[in-house]
Image (cartoon, rainbow, N blue to C red):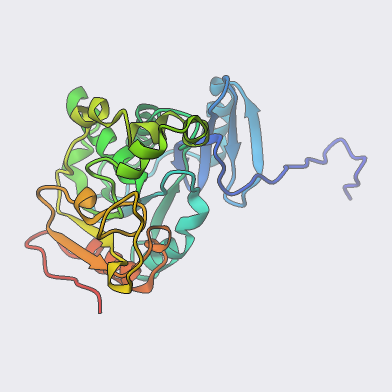
Length: 302
């Protein structure tokens, strides 16, 4: 029998389910290889949310491979949905959406966590690309982003296009749903950036949505698959943010959310911070993701 004093005893400390300092780099069987935003620290997190290893990238990668095992390719019938949270948020805010997507029939859902306020969008996109390229090589991929998560995805797609997509990710993209995406930058970020405190809070990534948007824009791509946009508009309730515009979800305006080529553009009377949990938005997401390859069938929520 093991005791607290036994040399065989191992204590694996729990980690917070999402933070502003750790970024997922690889995902396999719910094990996650993560990097720290400051310095060169790495760790491995198990499905139960405990830290199983920490150290250098090479050390943690070896332990990750040992614990998670080899990649098993189940073929194109395997459908993986990847969820991306927004600025200052964490993977925790995507739990309800994850449960709904699993219940809809997509069994593998990854809540991608990234240090949104501690690094540039290019670093977030590089981590997302690495995670995607580490998944089964022929699996079908869908994405759901909230707010800045959509910009991270668009940057990752642009990087894949520039690099020639060596792992063949782009042809396997099935559907994308953008919730409250600042596809044309964010006026509120441009205005608040005049306050130095804003930059300290949101970091380089947040500033790229505002005053540095024009530098970022050429590196963003349009999804190469059918994609839908769900925007919030509270103007019907006479609730407006003077820093954003007449029709908005209080943080992103209707016009800022638009992107050429969208298969559907849905507007709901929902605030920006609750777009990923609103039952109408969640129902729309699950319906859209589960549509077969072919013409888009309208999936407007009730």
